[in-house]
Amino acid sequence: MTEPDPAVTARRDQAAAADQHAREIIRMAAEAADAHKDTGPPGPVEWVIIRRMIATAKRKEITVCPHISPAAPQPEFWQAWDPRRVRCQDCALAAWQAILGTELAETCDNCSTVTEQITDRVTQMPPVAAQAPVVISFRLCPACQAANQNTTG
Image (cartoon, rainbow, N blue to C red; front, top):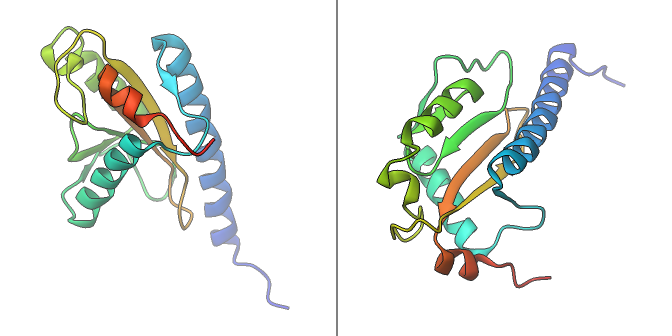
């Protein structure tokens, strides 16, 4: 029997730790901002946003924060209002704080409706192939929030 490569095992362990860290960040962010934290499968509007992130990544249009290193997996943050950037935790928080009080903070990331009744949402893509998990942050207007309600339950 072949012994597992210690480097691969270490990367998987780091990715698992980053995944757990991301889950804790999502829980704390949801509590602090009274954001909606998804616990079930993504709803249809959420899938549109997730697919938008994946398509942007496949086109290689996403730049990565200089604080993120493939040698040390950590949660990465993709914010729908700035779709061409993946950030570390500190830079994601700074970007979120920078838009507070602006029209962008009240704009639906699905339909672009501007409303004060915006719902902050966070979800997570799990680590794939021992890479870091991606925390996805987006905002929905009441109509998109209602359309996103998962109908599989």
